Image 1 (cartoon, one colour):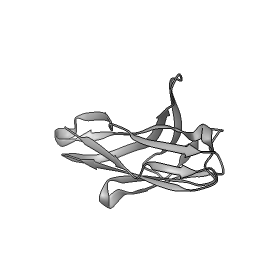
Image 2: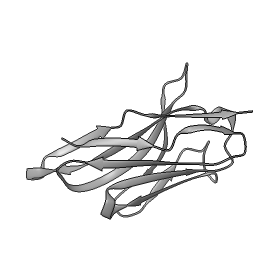
Image 3: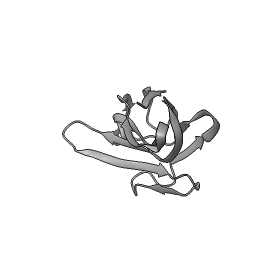
Image 4: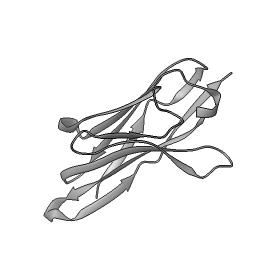
Length: 120
């Protein structure tokens, strides 16, 4: 079983920055896509950014130019650098990882989330 643990959330003023981290732990044979989603009150869970195992990235239009996703494959960790934060970025941020565990079995895991609050 692969578990994801997020960290780095908190309270920041508009225009500030935060860096989220998500470490995957377990019997991992390979990680494919790692991604971030977010869930704001009253909204559905929305896609934020992803990076696949080739290094290709994709971002939601609302965060392009402000957020940067990166990963350290040696540490099975994905990061989300969030700059120029806006109050509308306030949400619980969830990490996602998909890949193969021991015996080649596919897995898809979500973290428990980390709260990001941006004050105006």
